[in-house]
Image 1 (cartoon, rainbow over the protein chains, first blue to last red):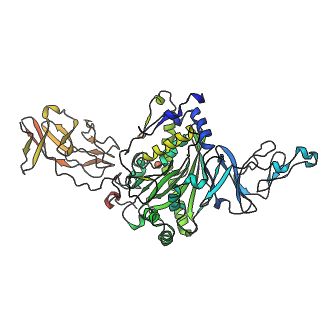
Image 2 (image 1 turned 135 degrees about the vertical axis):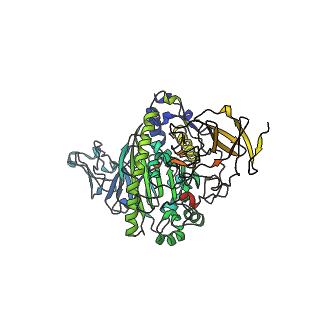
Length: 435
Length: 139
Ligand code: FES
Ligand code: FES
Ligand SMILES: [Fe+2]
């Protein structure tokens, strides 16, 4: 079946049309695994998750289990979590600290640097049939990090991480590089499975602000969103570079809502750390949601977890890992400035768990919508009709916007979604989509 | 017949429809100069209110009133009285503005009101910012 899908016909950026098949078709899923996930850079872990030598976490890269491990030499590496003997899953915990990686099946063991160090009954092999130096763990082809965010890539041809992220780094710095210490994780990620295609998550996280008053209508009714549904329609939709997109949205005109509502005591150091245009953007906005292409999304938002708490900011990064054509595993991390006070850590943690994560009041609404969208779009009849992405396409970009890339004024619109789908199509159809 | 008449206070009223165009219990959308209005007929009386829901600035839809004779917004279900524009059901909080109506020989004339000064600027204009009022008591 795979050769019968004309991927190029599934997305029409000009017309603002996207085929429903991209969310449900097994052939599209296969094409995506090969063309996109086995070639693009994927987020693996943050350095603060593996601070000590021997620390490791198990992650996924293009659907394969990968071990991210801090070597005794201080270098963080990434390997396929599979023994070279029979392929057994080497580390069976998703996180830990190991002096050696011992295979549970026949006992082959590896150093944290990935060398095969011992083989059971080694004396029964002759030199011709066992060369341990050839049998180290399989390395992730490219591994690199940006501001502590470790990425991996299965392709040699894909440009280096810095070039791949390109101008998105300018915006990432506003979120993760705004203090000298940068950010660190608050605990391990929360993981859960959703019956949705991963692109409904990215579609929402390329900056869909216009679902708030319907999908989260009950939250609005409680008074946890501003009363005017157009209050959150200001700001910009931004294409930083290629498929890397985000929105930035101002809050109410009060100092508390500047700098994403971050604690006052951090603001002087933020002002010092950011460049002038970054400072201008950070100062003027309270919310930013975006996606590092293809499936690493972030949200820097001020929320009220309940009626008694004041709006409190949090920063979450999440991976939408496809586990099948219509299933997705979500990994969601909470980040905080290394310099943050204990008091702020508690507040940001509470705001995050009450609103997002598997039990969050917002996340629940979103998951329900994405699951039902996926279920509906599986239908053969439904698939005869395209989906619609046409909002605010007539708005020209602002030539005076202080940041790189293109910025379209107004945060209600479907520009960034179309940028994402256009890039998605290039990776599935082109030899060198990055060229 | 002229397309405009003067109101008692000297304002220009615009002809928008004929009585015969209106059915009892149904809402009709009309344009009067710059204003888009919703008109409703009850017996021999006609009322006109602004056609834009005050909640998310969505235009109301033509069609039947509710069984209680109210105007229902198609987007989030706010309800308004066609009599005086008042809110009868959330999520809207601000009433619809009422426009003066005059009936002359079976024709309906409506005062379009002043051209509104856009209180919240076009959100797609570079540098536009929300007003404090739009955020209400948030936080
Ligand atoms: S309005 Fe967006 S899916 Fe129906
Ligand atoms: S726009 Fe009318 S109820 Fe929301
Ligand atoms: Fe949402």
